[in-house]
Image 1 (cartoon, rainbow, N blue to C red):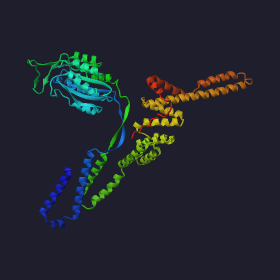
Image 2: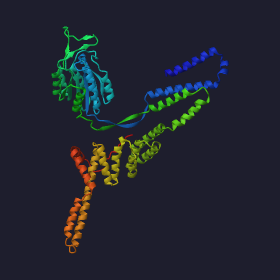
Image 3: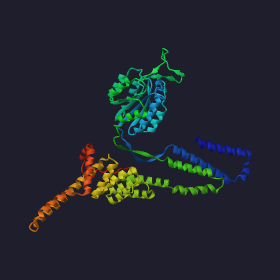
Image 4: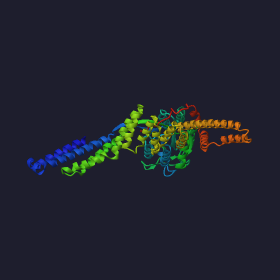
Length: 533
């Protein structure tokens, strides 16, 4: 808005200065009206481009999309000692610099957990709130330095209490990773341990430093730190306090030796708590890129427009068809149509959703999300052949497993058991946590086994009646028939044997999961068509 007013003001000022030099009648003769109009057009283009850029910066959103986010079972608060003693150089280059290297490795490997970062001296302060954005945690880790807080000293008790109070409002397991040299000036560690135990917070303590210790150099005073009696202070590692904290909170004490060893030990202890599946979250889609693109095009037109009448018009005419037919525009149209299809799908109007998805797919053939939703619509309409055809055309790795699962369901509905079984196996191998695929696989194998056994018994009864009728004609027939019966039982199809061996393997690995699966109803009504737009 300010730039718009500034542009208008400058144009008016330019006009006034021009009129001071030239008379208005003379100015009209030497400066044609067409040129003036072109200048006004350039000004309009410039201001319009600015307006679109500001609008893009505001982050316009419309339409919705579904994203999968992990359900975290563990929340970790990393509490780092930033007191002046962490500048000691008994571990090169300094204690704190070594811890920062370890922290980067920890952050990179705890992707299935949420992490918060605290710095403490005599008081603890939250540096980074609980998040799964590891880049943000890494940024705040980099800016830690000794004596960064306005409260000198070391208060481990306050650090534990502050971190515990922060974690208790979140569900799931709670861990505190306390990185310090163990020196505590508060003498209230017992109270902090009790508070952590009451709230089921486990504390992993990392002790850094050496028992011999080192002098503490103060960068502000340019001399070694001294106590109130004028004696030079030596900072030593206090392991006893840290061991006590870890033992009483069911945590673990780790003596710092190297960044790799420390991070590995912490990850081993925490990685037992992993994400408990995923959940779908609906959010609005960002559309700023469209306005930004328009703004850049207008800037380009304004920049290359010469002060001739026809050039801006020609450029606009040339660029407009390109813009209207580019892939981005096709993507916009297909997404709008896809959202209409989603609305019809939610209302269970699958035929209408199918026609909308087909039209959207014609505009954007590479959009696997639209293809997946079209296949789901065909599946819901019981048009399984078309659904399978569309599922097979999906190449996006994120959607491929869901498509394979739904395709297996389609084959199962068509009673093509062997194809369905093979696809369920592939889904389980790609995604071992897919309980529905395991259940459906077991159900189909049971059905196949039942049908095989019934057909085998029918053939055996038929052969036995024929043997009775032909008893006088062939003396050795009875023995041969018994032999044939045993062969029929032994000679199962190789595919059936492989399927049973696969199922046995899955049972041995997932006994607990199979108990949950067996409690479900034996039907395909619970098939989940993943709706990922």
